[in-house]
Amino acid sequence: MRTQADKAARFRELHQRPGAFIIPNPWDAGTAKLLAAMGFEALATTSLGLANTLGQSAVSLDAIIDNCRVISEATDLPVNADLENCGADDPETAAKAIARAAEAGVVGGSIEDSTGNREHPIYDFSLAVERVQAAVEAARSLPFPFTLTARAENFLWGRKDLDDTIKRLQAFEAAGADVLYSPGLYDLGTIKTVVSALKRPFNLVMGFADPTLTLEQLSAAGVKRISVGGAMERHALAAFLRCAREMKDQGSFGFVRDMAPVKDVRDAFTAAKSE
Image (cartoon, rainbow, N blue to C red; front, side, top):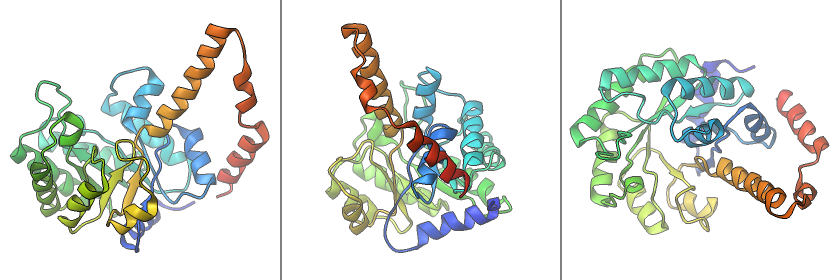
């Protein structure tokens, strides 16, 4: 088994090598094991996927940390944590989430400038920067190189202000964030504009981007890390609902023809265990 320091070093290497890499988002131990068996090099948690599995519209920081532990212990891969706003408005309090996530086994994590308050969804600029600065300090105090991602959430909340988004990302970069992230960017031109304004690695989430874009195109545009957020869990949930509707509305069970063969699933879990 790799140590946490080994995983952290490996995660840093993925961000430093040429080209982009895909970091998929499992939501439990089983999906983490399946992704590891397929050969992915790193994983990321998804707070949205977790909320859906718990039947909730939102999840607490405690639940997020517990999920980090489950996924980190499921495989030998580096895991990045979706920590939302780190559970607090105050910079020092929010920064404590970084140590908690590290203790749960992850080697990277994010802090975002979304407040969780629909009436005032984005932190004011100065407070957003202070929060990133506090998170950077917390990350640097750990005994291994924790990869901190800072997220500018404007586009997810209807604030399609590209200048402000770039200003925030550049400020987060200057504050010491290792990776920058702005969910909600859709087209390749906008993505290129953002990436070209930054010096550090950029994470693009495909759950909100043009689905026709490819790994090759995004790599050429300068994107370093490609995640999918809750998209895979939502796709699985859509399949679940189709099965349920067929039974309820038609009284039929044709969906069983599309089940994953038990042997294939067991073989994948066995392969993941031997990694």
